Image (cartoon, rainbow over all chains, first blue to last red; front, side):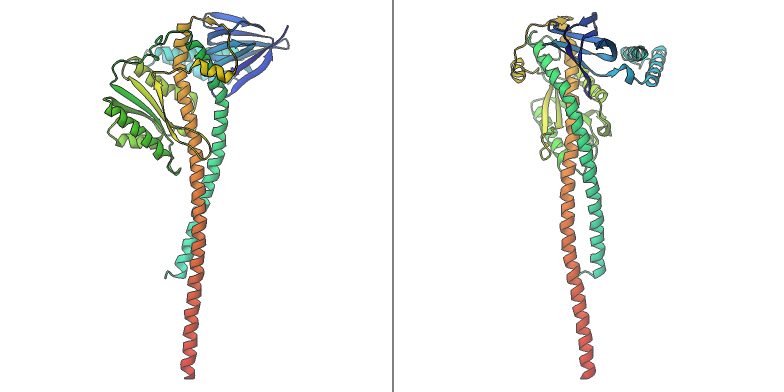
Amino acid sequence: MGTLQLEVVTPDKTVVSAEVEMVVCPGVEGEFGVLPQHVSLLSALKIGDLRYRVNGKDENVFISGGFADVNNNVLSVLAESAELAGDIDTARAQAARERAEKRLTAHDESVDQTRAEAALQRAITRLQVAQLR
Amino acid sequence: MPSLKDVKMKIVGVGKTKQITKAMNMVASAKLRGAQARIERFRPYAAKYRQVLAELSRKVEGNAHPLLAEHEEKKNCAIVMITSDRGLCGSFNGNIISAALKLAEEKTRAGMQVSFTCVGRKGRDVARKSDYAVLTAYGDRMGSIDFPLASAVAQEVIHGYETLAFDEVWLVYGEFVSMGQQPPRALCLLPLKTPEAEEIAEEAGEARCEYVYEPHEEKLLAELLPRYVKVQVYRGLLDTSASEHAARMAAMDNATRNCNEMINMLTLLYNKTRQASITSELIDIVGGAEALNG
């Protein structure tokens, strides 16, 4: 079986650029796998864990939502932030989680509920992905 | 004629100024390298984004999303002005500000109420003094620009556009063309103009085949468009930051050269003054000797 090119890019850098055997993306309508020679696809991604396989070994990347674009055997993932499981700062994610939880339980009018929820979701997912390394 | 000591002190003073301008030049060039690297890293993201959006917008109707729709009645216009926080970079900030004010005047003449959102202290100071309203100002952030900042700025104008508080949003920033060229640029942020698919296809040099969309096109577009605004604001921030450093480098280079020129002139003056004083002393001595002999 062949390989496909995976590119994970954020506004600040290219996080992953590699020939991989398989990718599993956290799509908004459920996870989906991408194998080589996949049909052209454009999908929105939610906050989650993107898995890819290189030489039979699985790697995990945290994605804070974004888009996946498959075309000509190239899968490009555009995310506002993305981190390899090994690069996640767990202490920071833990702090972010506590901060978000505090905000949500405070029942303060000025707190933007949706934003706080998203922040909590990101922190929890980051921690989950970090544990996979 | 100035005294010898005065000239000496002036030479020392100019020499110190030269040291400072030279140091600032070097700092600016180091920062410019960093800013340019960031632009380089951002480029693949922006290019891919344009491509994806162009492909998608070809599939859906023109006014499928509130951010694409032109408002029929145009009453309010917001201008996002990005300048630097610090001066000493030649006419860079002045150019951006005058471009923004010109645009504001144009819009006022067209019967619109103009308000400003400023990033960077220089622009903020001018906008506050002007007759236009300042909605939000982000000062002292140009040193630490990141995507969340662009996000915050963009979110504000998007919200304004969706709630019909603004009917037009413009972005004014310093485009980074080259080391010697940083012209101010005004870009219409909202209503969004999506990049033309044909244009992109030409750039890519290949025809793209049929796509599978998940979720369906309209929903996807609703997710993509607000982010595209953020991407553009972020690009404005990055460009302005690189331009600022390039402009400062050029300005400081000029200043250093002027210092050198001034030091040369002053040294000449110093030598002339010294010679004049020696001559007059000699005349005194010779005159005195003549008087004794006489």
